[in-house]
Length: 482
Ligand code: 4AD
Ligand code: MG
Image 1 (cartoon, protein in one colour):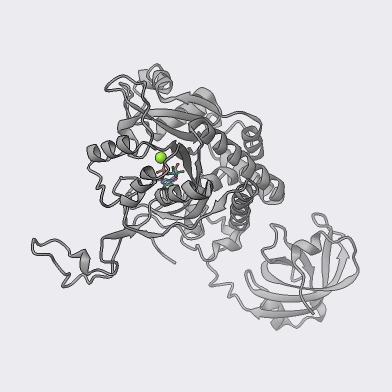
Image 2: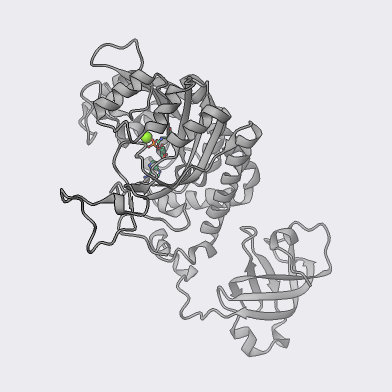
């Protein structure tokens, strides 16, 4: 007989029929009650074992995380907490799990840090199974949004020769040996002898390639892994993360902000509707976590209240210049509470500043735009009406409560001469980006796009606080286990 999913059975409209389920034992109480989970839902299915007629050797093998196949009658449950349960008639142990050796002992309330080291098993816990189901639904929502709007999904290369962000935080890709590396006459590594015949790296962003596609297909998006070798060991940074990058021909910066806001609201709404049980569980988890904090540091809203708040309110749009004025006059700045005090226009914003603006000042998601050209990437469109020394670019970052920057984007510099000038000034090799410059040579047009860090979105939606807990197997400095 084909087995049923726990989720289907719990939503059943009839009872008193024979079913088979397969899954993993969460708990086994009083030699009688198995809480069975098969991953289809946060909820367990209670399976009642007829212990008097079950051999002792079998009962002993019903341990946490053992894989079992259970057949029995699905009946309405007399116990509190569940609508249905199974009265077991046949129980087969598919895979034993030695209770002494199983690393995750739920009664000890394992910490998130501990579970990170058991990332191959943590997904068998309620919290991580909920997070990973939410993550899956969120990624479906991303495709659903863009496909409904007539965007095309483009798979930009993972291995590339370009540094899209010009930040030099790249992982090299090479097939050259470390011992006896071929050298040129002047002693440099001879990449001409390497696999691709040139220097290559893992991509930091698919944007530049996506731009070429936008200039033909009109509206495109990427959704794939990106890599950064920045050595920032924070709760917001991964060395390998997933980024969503839409790129749209004929969109200016305002259109870009509208798109980003609409997109974020859509995917959150989609997930709130589809993941009610998981989010309810994660909301409870967050409440428990917050109880450990002093009253003043606790969030004023529950997880679902926060998500609904984002859905119901406009994001506040503020120029960089206005933001600097607010920060300069802010209490933490005057009281020297910021680690990086804001002294003058032109300062790069640190996460402490972003979080002040979002969490203390505006108390809602904020879109900052028109940043100083000096602190942003080469491809952003230069504003023409600015004072010398105070040049700005048509950049925008979206800042979220508890997260900081969730989106970075811009209107792109479509003017060939201005772009080349900018690249020269920054020492970016025109030869290397000949193909990118071609888009400005042939049929150039206004266009815009942004990048949304998928894990930062998952953080926000699940109410988790460390980015290592929202990706299956995190890659961070000194950590690439699994
Ligand atoms: O602001 P970033 O660097 O922008 C770009 O890469 C542009 N090329 C995007 C574009 O316009 N198409 O990165 C975009 C987003 C950030 O806002 C952040 O959410 C996320 O990517 N991000 C990271 N997420 C996790 N770990 C890291 N190390 C991240 N670096 C950036
Ligand atoms: Mg950025």
